[in-house]
Length: 408
Ligand SMILES: [Zn+2]
Image (cartoon, helix red, strand yellow):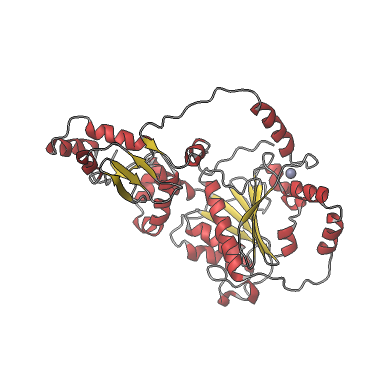
């Protein structure tokens, strides 16, 4: 262990005996009491020294034996310390790729804020490189989103779409003006390559484009058609539900940007649940939908470029949080923002009993189980003031990167 106080958290003394790590309420916490001599040790915890060397330094400073170990242990329990040599084999391999790490350094620092175990941030960044994500739709949202995921370290991002790039598909970070006329799929693949020139080599897959193909950690549906954004077709998601593939919706319809829901098949509400809920609320919904979906050449819909870019970014952040093992707020909700006010708000989406995805049944069983009294476990909070209990809860619920067990 080469302990390193997480450099992503700015440090400050609140008074002579209390250190605050971090500035923002989401991740800041305070640690105390701490005397000045022990505080001086903090500067030595920068990842360049192992514990034996740190103990020797402490003796030189006339600190009692065991002080270093106690400090490191205390910091580690508070999730404040990283291990400059930790994270396992995949992390070691990534450590050898200095160019990749240089580019992803801010992402690594950010991951250190949401991981508690020393070495965990690099382990998660390394795990991203082994993941495979598919984006359906290479428009203003889909192509940018795919490029962001690749740029953030996801090893394999494939984009599916049909037809050729049209001028209105062009977006900064997505499909460039030079690609107009090229097949959308080819142009999107090039955008993904540009975003991450150092990504790992593509693995061989069995041919076919079925959603049931193994190895997909997530599918993102980012249709160019605004009716498909507003009212995602449940039939299109059937193979994803059947194979237990998590999927996320994102897009722009008229002046509204939409991110979510993130569907965990059989656990959280899906496109079918959305349709059933809307039909319950508005008897005219099916009739309107039939008209919106019915043929005739479609003229170009509205799609504000800045809103599309924001949607791509937020959807990518939800996707990454999920892939990294957290439970982002897009599960069971659609985040929406409309021009020109642009206030993001979550529209909750409940599993519907008429939907065949099975989420409603599962939610019913879970509610039943939650009514069974359980003994609450108290958390050790001694000497650590955590402004929010959210992080601890999220950390407790974290899954291994890129995994999700389907309950279908
Ligand atoms: Zn459903």
